[in-house]
Image (tube, rainbow, N blue to C red; front, top):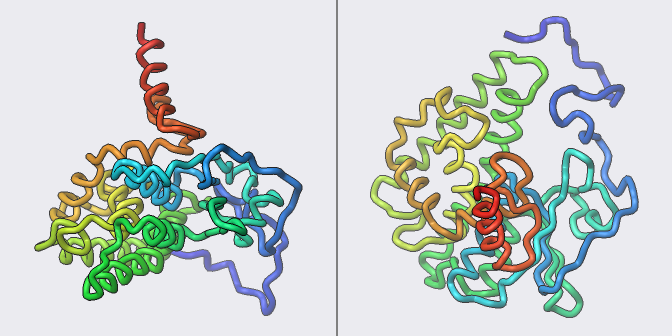
Length: 290
């Protein structure tokens, strides 16, 4: 089904919002819209993000580094409310001119290093701390191939399927069918690949797992767009096994909470400045239950 009344103009112009959940922040131009100073915490690594799949990649990575005993990965994480347009503030745009979360500043370097795009941040942290990235020259390209597979494929899942299935102001069959077909193909790619592997790159947990899990693991576990039943994810047995295995990791549980401002209060940690924030969160829950 499509809108038979719409005829594309010879030259597209931005006359009105497109409607839907994100209409008030979508625009065809770049740059800052207002002055806004970002907070700066005590750690060299300063993350400005939100617990969307792309944001979760980075907080899971940081929590995994800390769980591995790498103290240099301590970080401060501050929430960026994309629905309110925080990503168009002057300080944020100075870190990421593309105005998308997540964005990272590493103040341990001189001058400080900015890193934007979630895949780039994962790779930067993996190389900085020599962790979750194979050192074997025969295995590293495989890991990077899957990392870049995720970066190239997920827009079909998010901006494509997710938008038209969950957020578009009208539901049309053609775009939903088109993107559902592609997402199921991607799920099948992963399911077949994981048939004889514990992790994406074999027996080693890497940034490829972290990146792919944040989108595709969340999808098959029923945590993305409420679309697991619609896409019949129960048929992807290998992918489900892998997704559940990663979901059970303590660092993943923590990473999912950081910069989260929706859902169950016990699963939210809007701002993270220290590892003790998680324990304080647990204690708050116990105190409130008494």
